[in-house]
Image 1 (spheres, rainbow, N blue to C red):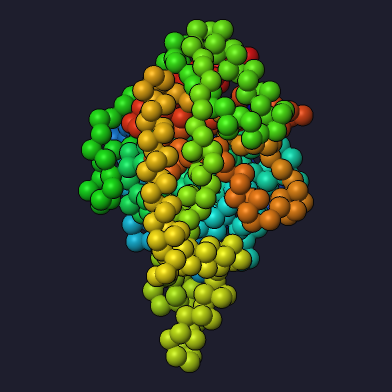
Image 2 (cartoon, rainbow, N blue to C red):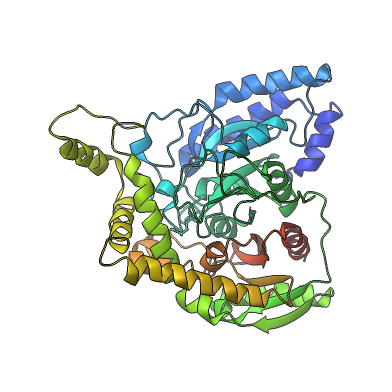
Length: 477
Ligand code: GLN
């Protein structure tokens, strides 16, 4: 198959008049529709509006009206990120029929640079998962394009799956609470970038856990994902946790070979041997090319990361989901019985099993009588874990470890795992997310054709270093 043009090359060709955006958009829509019946990467394909938008841009280019860093680039958007007038369900039946009246800031910024939104991608319901196996009631699980018996990873599974599958220029907006961009990027062999918490506005993101959620990007290459991340970054007064940080030129950041790299011992040890081997090969090559590599230890993050994360995230999720009760957004029913009966009926029908489990777990962890022992304890632990990272970054530029402890598992392998065993698979990704640190996952190698992802974590607001390291790792042969 012909290699897709990188986005910056694509945009250059568009501006030279060598690519018709209408034709390119038509082609990718055709590919999306055709592949979707088998792989289920989309919850919605926006054919009509995408084609209309493409024609407008083509006409605008001729009159010199349309410019932009993403001119004519087809972008897919994870279902939990609102797009005006596109049904946005966060992969849940409970949001059936919800049509946002506005674009999420990240979407608006991409559109302002000429991007064309072609669809909403499949995900674990509200982001609750690691494999995209926890899709909402009546949704189909997205399948890995490398081997459809296997998962795409989660929760941004459809975004990573389609990014890997398409033969055309494209990038995707994903969302991470505890690793949902890195995990699917690793399992599908694409690049996934998660920014510092607050770097990209959360306005228009359907919340999972507010203190952890980030919108980020996925692309076939780090350069593609970096261009999209650069476009969506920036302060937004509509998000009170948005940072007033200096913008960084990520798209043109050169690969760097003189980084000080820390290899996280505990995260490595927790991974399957084949995964360790592929990642170690990539790290050895980085060292050969000039990086300084040392082993480092994050014992607190390794021991308490999962517990602190699942208490914090489910607590916040349980309050966030309270608003979905059949009165305001999405699913409605016939008003019968008293309010409690009505709410219970709608919520029982609208939420899937994992969402219900997390509502129960989170409500328990914040109940009076248990709050001090669980939620508040998790908050204290979180502070300690952040301190441990701070120390590590005193002498290092980036930390590296395998993104996931295994290659993409089959659905029958996943079904054998208990929910707790599934949560434990997030061991390497959850700590950076608890600390709000920017991190990338890039393909380090493969085992039996299945990709192995290397995770690169940088200090707060050091996205540029993260991209430079990711480009260096990705360029290794
Ligand atoms: N696997 C983690 C969870 O289930 C992370 C999900 C996410 O980042 N949205 O919570």
